[in-house]
Image (cartoon, rainbow, N blue to C red):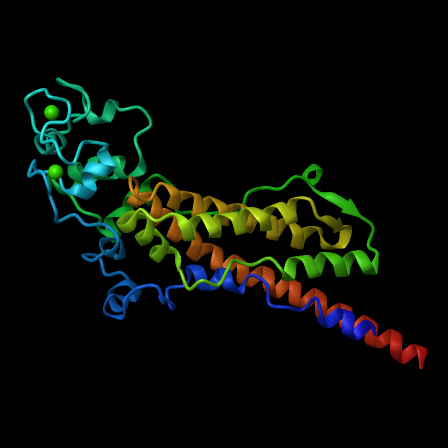
Length: 298
Ligand SMILES: [Ca+2]
Ligand SMILES: [Ca+2]
């Protein structure tokens, strides 16, 4: 009987998450684009260029359609702020195309990561119209110290501790086995593509709902004291997962934020694997205890 109970808690949790961020599965992309997205991101070619179109400039003002969204300018107007200088001219010279006159882009309040990146890349490469270059983006994020990830700290008073009752342990492990993302074959960048190219937030919304649900279950879970570290690990992971998917809601205007979300996801994949190992070890220890108990009883 106990064996049956135990087998119900050893389901594969979190594996769907691994698939989400792993670069090995891209079902949602047409096969001819898989190779470039999956490849190990050579410096001159960013997987983001599959998501963002920097070559079309509908209104011919020197600012691509994708950059118009990033800077918040009107893609159908050559001079959004009507100051006599085109959007393209202004951005290339470091002026804010939304503010008439000499306001600099650097003076903009709360500029997105992408706007900061382009200003930085302009200064660094002397290219007035820099593109999304993976190795440059990495260098930029690294300089801002944004690529050294760590799990958020979870304090004890955020956790509802209970005694190490076998049933409570089983309940907790069963709950964590059910924490996973919907398997819809939509990896991270494919979701970004859906948002950016089709303004389709449906799948993203669905995934975000699932993440919030999982996080909710974890946050209100009864946590047996002996599972404290495992719980901290899980909660930290899911909070970061949420952060990553939240960055996709801003995918249209912030490709560098999406890049950071993907990097965070890749880092999380390793943490997820570690948490799964921890969990498997706990379950196998429990099995041993049960077996021992049965042997003694016989
Ligand atoms: Ca334009
Ligand atoms: Ca202007």
